[in-house]
Amino acid sequence: MFEGSFVAIVTPFKNGKVDASALRGLIEFHIENGTNGIVPCGTTGESATLNHAEHEEVIQIAVDICKGRIPVLAGTGSNSTHEAVELTQRAQKIGADGALLITPYYNKPTQEGLFQHFEAVAKETDLPVVLYNVPSRTSVNMVPSTVARLSVIKNIVGVKEASGSLVQVSEIIASCGPDFAVISGEDALTWPILAIGGKGVISVTANLVPDKFSKLCQAAREGDMQTAKALHYELLKLNDIMFIETNPIPVKTALALMGKIENEFRQPLCVPTNEHLSQLTTVLNAYSLVPD
Image (cartoon, rainbow, N blue to C red):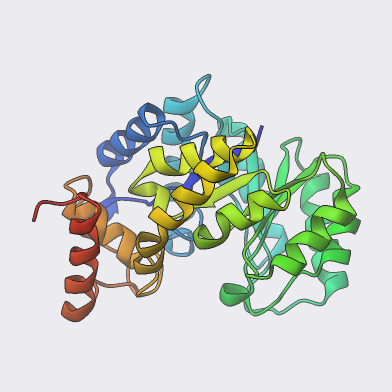
């Protein structure tokens, strides 16, 4: 179910509130352009600044539009196990197809603490659970042996890997077996991860070019590594510029320049510097995403 190109979709805001109309438009744009699944309320969706009502609203919109078309993998993680359980159960009630759970941030749990956290959440939901390892955001790296322990739990079905280490990704794939979905959490490493056995990507850049990421994943799945490689290098500069400032500042700015959302962030995030905006606009022009 969780294979191919999934988009870590932004949360559009307007006048300080979730822009439901813009979000619906974005999701339809993705379905029309081959995206294989929607991930609302992730890091790119500014989940850390959404209150619980907004969190439910965003997931509800995604479920309403996607149901029967493409799966919704809802971000339901927290640095509190109790809150992660609660958010995951709410997503299940709304009708999400799965839950994406980040490693608890700030707490810096041990490997045993990580195991107990995810085990506890998995026991309290019927949803398939995808783990999310992103040390740059959380200050803790979930090592392959911990992922392997968790992969034995029936409804823990995969991991979004954003450690940046192909060795670590390889060790997870080797230890967890072919039925466990290892998904790229770094756009620039999507093709290499697919080449060593990954099943897909949860992408930031796909917010802008969903067709490209869908084609890259499809080509790799079909064994057409020449096409996948060509798309990897085609997207190199776009992937790079998406992280010129903290995600999701560049991607939301790009979507605003493309006329798809308002250029609004939830504090403490803010608009990019003029220098970075100029660099971003230059790259978007090169990809014909905004007018010259």
